[in-house]
Image 1 (cartoon, helix red, strand yellow):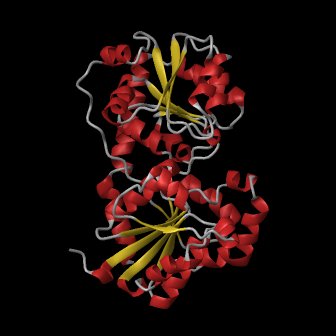
Image 2 (spheres, rainbow, N blue to C red):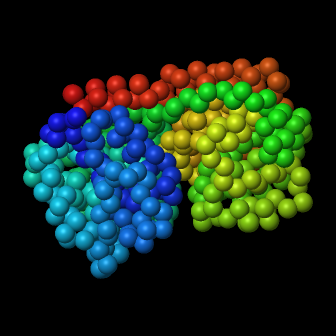
Image 3 (cartoon, rainbow, N blue to C red):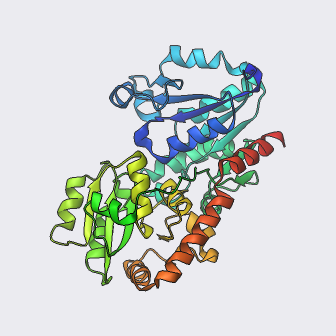
Length: 378
């Protein structure tokens, strides 16, 4: 059993399954630091609708007040119970910015004399300032810059994420730790069998997009671009649960084009099998500070086609494991789609091998745990 004063508290915001990569990353941090306690500020109705991500996580109900509505301040009693535990922790991790979890982290760290670490999860990406930007800049001026600069370390998932953040805030306490990805075993089922199982073409080259259907990830725009791009003998497969874009909208956008297959949500071994039956992963997302789907595809041996909204693309360009257009322009992305379609089978396999090798080196859970432990000991 982990001694109480050697544990870390991870404090986030609405850490639910629907939050996607942020919740998964917090889970990975907690798993890398045995005995970690995870707490999240969360609207009671959202928690009731989805249930906790993990049964042992602690959810502080957001107060039904103006401060609760606009700054996610929790109910007083729940906050006090957490504050009373401050001295039991060796340190604190604040996950995400712009809400009361930042103030609570700083205050608990100051009261206990313990350090805190900040994990922005893409919160300083330029795209984030395209909505409610004046509020976020006000928060940075009033509190955020001091909060970030006072951290023992600000932890980014990729070099690309760090570079973007440093344009917004001057920091000397940054570190990059690629999030971990578990390598899935190869499916014993033949690719042709899996493709038939999902009613996908057996002979065509398959380009896979998977993840929640969110407008930030531009699923409708990707469908529209694929429709008007000449990609011989190539099909697009789109998988994921509804978010602010629905499966029905994707099906309507793809209607009449037999090259596009929108399958809805697929999980577990079925998703692992499907990834292994495809030829490459594609993302035209506006913002991905890490992109677990991309990393998991690489670990499965798929080359990737990723636009510059994917911060991992900065690290991948030099490794010949896919196609990485230099701009987000539709013409550049369409050219990358055509380059994928025209790549020889031998080059495609080689890019996949290089993708897997990169993932094994950079995304291993053991490597992440070692790097995080080393950071905490410095």
